[in-house]
Image (tube, rainbow, N blue to C red; front, side, top):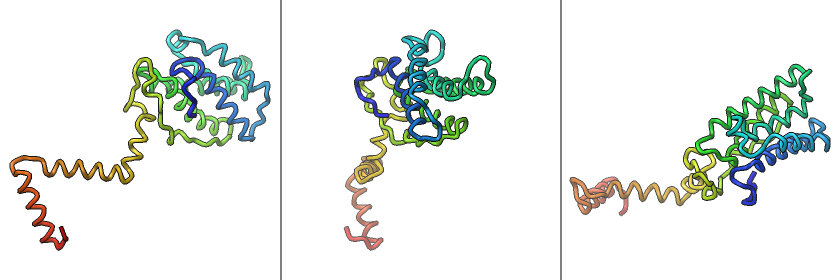
Length: 209
């Protein structure tokens, strides 16, 4: 899901991508036959409902609508139907709740990733289709592009590259440097005396300086 810089940080294009990604993944998995007409129907429904400012006007993010369109088309949900429609509505409600937990400010890229991750679970539960989840490996590269300011540490996709580095050799050295500075900082005992104490302890333990 590393879609490029041509896609706006905020905008309905993200909802269209979510719809296309999910319906294509379900189709490619092969358990359920998804026709070209169904793919087009999902995209058309998403485009008709995911319009600018939809989230602010109605309280429903267009990405939730996109996921709902996938389930609606596959299940054949309609007013006369029973469980098909109820299931679709519950899926959309789950999407809205998932997205609501990531607001402040809104970030469509986060919403797409979180929604698709949750959708994979719902696809398994309601459609018996198993899709891979890869969101754990995503590192967001769009921090500086957000017009309202990135949520940074509040977002689970922020700064994971730093965590990976710190688990490696550079991270170990960084931690050691932090520990070294903390131990040998000037205090009640001056820095030189601390070094001598450390040297004495090393020799007493049989370590070569």
